[in-house]
Image 1 (cartoon, one colour):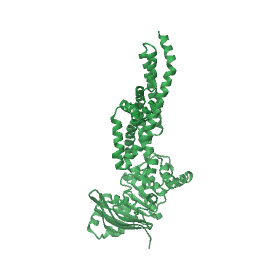
Image 2: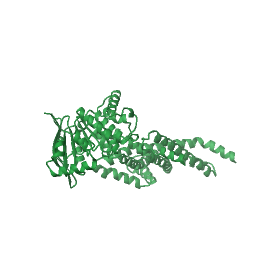
Image 3: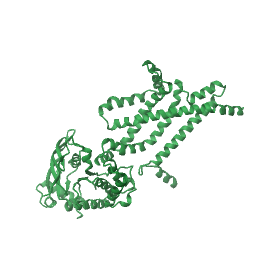
Image 4: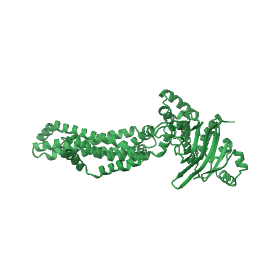
Length: 252
Length: 235
C-alpha cells in the first residue's frame, strides 16, 4: 500500500456566478502519475491552481504529505516551493537565461549560495537534455526546449509533487515528443505527477490512473485499461473515443 | 562686431555653466523623486489594495497630471507660506515638478508592469517566491527594461520643464541667460540661442545614454533594432 501524498477534499470554486469546481475529491499516492482529462472549460486548470493555492478554493481542503495546506496559518510560499508547476505556455522568466531560470528559485527562495545553486541548476538542465543551452534566453529556444527548461525549473526545487497544466498543448506536433519523453522518464524515476493533458498515448501508457472531469465534477476515475476498454459511464467512453480519434494514439 | 560677440559669449560662459549645473540638479531632482515614488505607486496600482488605489493613488495621478506645471510651481512656492512652511524656490520646484513627474512616471511603469504579463508573476509564485520577491526579481527587472523608451521622453520633457523654475527665481540656465541679456544690450537672440544649444546638448546626450542602456539591457526576443538593421541592409 503506497502512502498518500496529496489529498483534496470537496474543493469548490466559483468565478462570479459560474461554479467551476463543484466538490472535487481525490488522492494521489507517492510515485504515482495521475492524468486528468476532460473537455475544455471543465475546471481542470482551476483544479491544479487550487492545489498549490495560486487560486485559493472557496471551500474544501488540501493536504500535502499530511500537512493541511489550505490552513491559513501555513506558510504557503514554503509549500509552493515543494510543489512544482509546469504551465501550458511555459512562463519562463524572459529576462533570464535558461540556467538562471532554473537557478533563481534555488538562490532566492531556498537561499542556496551561488556556486552550489549554479551546479544544481546545471544538473537539472542536463537531466532534461539541455546542458548545452544554459546561456540561451527563452526567446532563443524552441517551444519544446522552453518547456523542458520549465520542467527543470520545477525539478530544481526538489518537489514532492509536480503539476502539469497541458504541458504540450502549445507545442508544434513534432516538439511534443521531446517533452513527453522527459515526463515519461520522470514517471519512471518515481516522481509524483498530476498531469492535465490530452495526450492519450501518454495517459494510456504512463498514468497509473486517469481522472475524467466534466462540468466541475469527477465523472469517473480508474486505471487506463478500465477507462479505455470498459468505462462505467457512457460519457467517459464517448469522450475518450472522440479525443483518441482526434489526437491519435501514437502508442508511446 | 563678431569679435565682440565672441568675447561676450566667452565672458558669460562661466555663469551659463553655473546655470546649466543648476538645471542638471533640478532635472536629477525631478527624475529622482519621480522614480522613487513612481515605481511603488505603479506597483500599488497594479498589485495593491483596491481601496488604497482608488482613494489615494489614482486621484494623486489624476490631479498632478491635470494641473499645469507652472500653476503647481506657484502653488508650492507661494502656497507653502500660507501653511507656515518656508520652502526655498529650489525645493518648491523639486516638489512641484518632481511630484508631477511621479504621476507621469507611474503610468510609464504601470504600462510596463502590465505588459510583463500575469504569467510571469504566477510562475514566480509557483516556485515559492512571495509577492514581494516575485516583484523584486521577476517583474521589476523586466518592467524597468520595457520602461526605458518611454522614460527617455519623460527625461527630455522634465529637463525642459526645469526652465519653468525661472518663474520663482531659481537661477538655472534661463535665468542666467536673462541676467546676461539684461546686463548687456541687444544680445537676446545670441544668448538665448546659446541656452537653446545647451538644452539641446543635454537632451541629446541624455537620450544617447538611455539608448545605450536600452541596448545593453535588452531582453533577447524583445528587441526590434536588430530586425530593423536587417531590413535596412536589404534595402
